Length: 152
Figure 1 (spheres, rainbow, N blue to C red):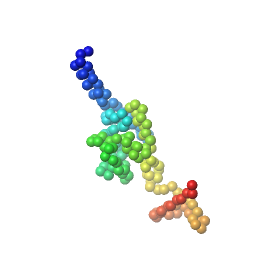
Figure 2 (tube, rainbow, N blue to C red):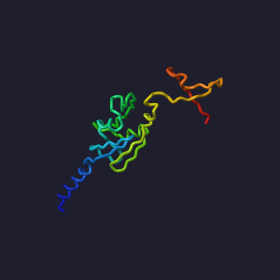
Figure 3 (cartoon, rainbow, N blue to C red):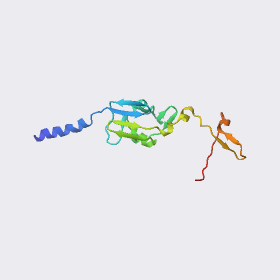
Figure 4 (spheres, rainbow, N blue to C red):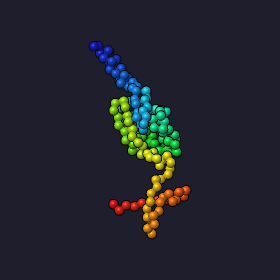
């Protein structure tokens, strides 16, 4: 092989490696297939426009927002049209795994549970200082401050 042919072949190799590969993202009960992701050996960079399809978040000036919940994001999670989804998952303590072109993301702790959707805390009962049983539901419609303490 001539030196010139070798150099042309070597120069073309990184371009082929950086070609877009289809990626599947699993979150909750659905799978999203993306044709374009930014190549990165350790992180998953998706287009910010694809974020609502993936996990219902949307990038706004306040941060990554879903309904009325906004999570501030650092500048290293965004680069032009790209958003570092795995970096965001680490920031919000969301579990994820990667196997080739498939990424699976667990529940997002800050949006987990029915209380997030209804904004109603689960009912519980505790004795007050006099021993009378008091239920949280007794205060429905009022603002309540609940303070807990444990000896361990």
